Length: 435
Image 1 (cartoon, helix red, strand yellow):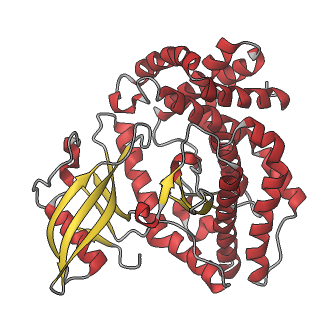
Image 2 (cartoon, rainbow, N blue to C red):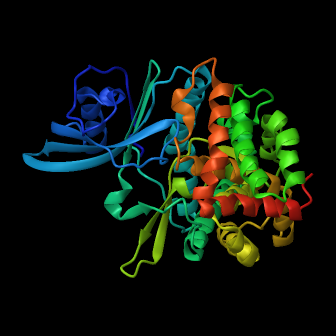
Image 3 (cartoon, rainbow, N blue to C red):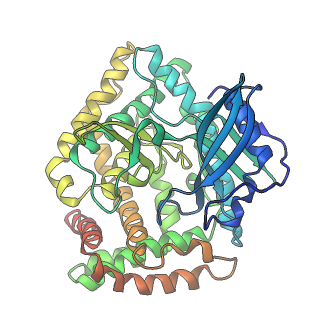
C-alpha cells in the first residue's frame, strides 16, 4: 500500500463489459487499468487484456458502485493474471449526493494511504498483527470521477455474510476484537505523539460532525429512513410513545442529534470505522464452516469518535435483539480484554475501566438505536424497489422518500425476520424510556 499512486488523466477506450454492466463503468479505461497494473506489479508489467466482471448483489452498494476487474498481463516474458475490486462513484443529478460521494472517497483514501497504514504500524511495533483490510494499489480522482482499485479479498477466501440475518456469535467476537485493535492502535498513536487524534489528523472531524451538515438534503433522507422504520412499528402497534419520538424529536433534528452523539472527548476518542455493519465486513471460514478471520471494508465514514459508537452501530444493525439481550455483557468483556491487551503490551496503562466503558456504551445507545432503525429500513426496502438514491435530483428528495416510505410498511408483511429486527430496537427503546 505504500505504492499507492494517483493518475492525472485517462484516455477513453472501451473495455470488454459483462452483460448488463452499466455504461458508467466506461471510466474503467485501458489507460486507467495500465496505470493500476504498473503501480501494483511494477513498470515492466504489460497489460494484455482486461474484463469487467460484476459480482455484487442488490443492496450491496448504495451511493457507490463496486465491480471486478480481471486482468491478463505479461511480466518478464511470462503470462499472469490479476484480479481487482474497483470502487467508483455513480453519476447523479443530486448535488448533495455528488458532494458527499466526493468527501467519502477522499476519506476512504485517507484511511488506505495514511491513517490505516500508521495504525497497522503501531500494532506491529508492539508485536501484534496489522489491521486486516484490503491492499489498495491505486486511486484515481479527477474531474468528478473517483475510482479506487482494491485487492480482491475473495482470492484469500473472504466472503460476505447475509445481511438479512443476525451475525452468529463467533462472527461477532471476531468483529469486536478487530474493532478493539483499530481503536486501541489509535490510542497508542495519541500516546506516542502526545496529540489528540483530531488534532494530528483533522480529516477525522468529518462532515457529519460539523455544525452545519454540508449535504443539507441528507437531513431529509436520514429522517425519512428512521420514519420508515417507525411506520413498521406503527403498523405492528404498541409503540405509540417511541414512534412519536422518532417522528417528532428525531426526524426534525436528526443531523443535530447524530452530530452531538458523534462528538467525543478523551479518553473516549479514537479512530472509528464509522459504518461497521454486516455489509462492510468480510469473513474467511475454515473447512468446517467456522469463521476464522475478519476483514473490514468501506472506510468512507472514518472519523474520530467514541469507540462505543462503533460497538453500538454494530450490535444494533447486525445482531438480533435476542443476541443482544443474552450476550451483551460477554461481548463487551471480549472487546475490552482485546483493547486492554494492546495497550498493556505497548507498556501503557488503560485510561478507562471496564465499568467506565460500560457507562459510555450506555450513553451512546441512542446512536445505536437510530442507526439500527435507518439500516433496518434500508434492508427492508430491498424486497421492493430498494433505496431510491439513484432517482434523486435537486428538487424531488422529499417526494421520492415519501413515496418510498409508503411502500415500506406494506413490505414488512412479507419479511417478518427484518421486521422483527426493527421491532426489537423499538422494544429496547421502550425499555430505555425513550420519549
